[in-house]
Length: 439
Length: 113
Image (cartoon, rainbow over all chains, first blue to last red; front, side, top):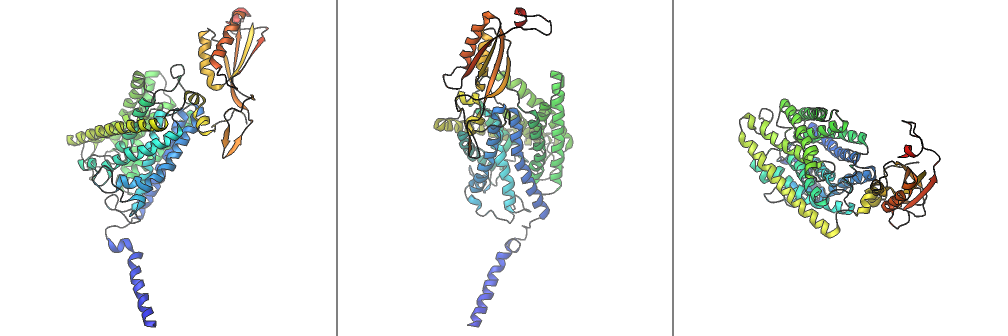
């Protein structure tokens, strides 16, 4: 009896050994690097901060009767999409597969464990990669808010956002970044999400701005931003968080991350400066709002290029993006008369397109051997791949956004009533107001 | 000369302004005020606690006019601000003793326009 007990104990112990050392025992290549993991976790937190930052960036631009509606939309996106992502969003986006989506094999994070998944990032736990990507999935739909600000029903917004994340963001994420994604296999370069995040959200912004229509009383009363310091606070926090967005996309604490960090800062600086100079030339005075807009445009443009270009191209990317975005916002928008209220299209789509194309011009294998050379480094093919990717993504995002909008509009109505719009979304959608008059 | 003071719903300001411009009344002072009306207004809720009977936000207009503009001004305000619901506001008309334009030191009739 005693002997049997001893044998059983030994057997149990032997069975426990592989369970205790699952990673290292089974796969010698997959070793977690503590420096890489720390950097990716910090970067994830930095990218998360960008959504509240965006809330203040956008919130400062609206009239004060709509301040809370913007903050609320951004925060509910954080709540809803964090859940969507772990339940099925991550699986649709990143589970290996050649299909429209990645499939549901990783739904509920099934099989997404603490050991590395080498095809995405070989030195950090798979869940670290997953949570880093979650923050991108959160901020992308939040960017669209700028297009329909001050006039969308809250309930419809939540439904629209979940559908958009599932049918626009997740598939596109899979095509560009997922194992088996067809744009990835075509050779498209998108370091940190110029296409997946900014063109995607920017073109969705244009589609929604066109179908939802202009805000009331726009001709007689152009609404001034209700709080410029909030815009600047938001910009500062976005710039800060963007280091996680771009440098974190190296998925390791290495030279590529440092390159991304340096060019990100440089491009934002160049773009802020060039927007200020443009205003100086055209309107006689540089404005705070202008520098903030320029900095954000610069950050957008450098996003797809951050891991592939060096510092001088980053300056050029920054200087030029302000010229393109400034033209989109202050010349093209008034001319066509669409009400992209907070310029989500004008900054994110235009800036994103320029960034994606600039990657095809300035990318260099000297910066990142895993990347490709661009047009100016003897590889015009890359520019064409970038151009094709931009067109495919823009067309897909525009069409599907339009369809989702129409479905939500049919079922529950997207726009608030005229009276609700005039009273403001804070009181009519949330029964709260941001500011008091007297105590 | 009369001083017309109107208390209106904040969201009606744009329409009232438009009506006033149509009536060629261009000189107005606007301020944000709080007041108790008879209506409950839009109730606010903070973390589940209902705030009722609080002061409601209103907009106050002050318009100084010569006699021939009194009725057109009143009509314009009503046209812009009236919804038929409680809370539309009130208009007060007060005799105005004097009006002086600081820049020119003009007084009375010419100073108002």
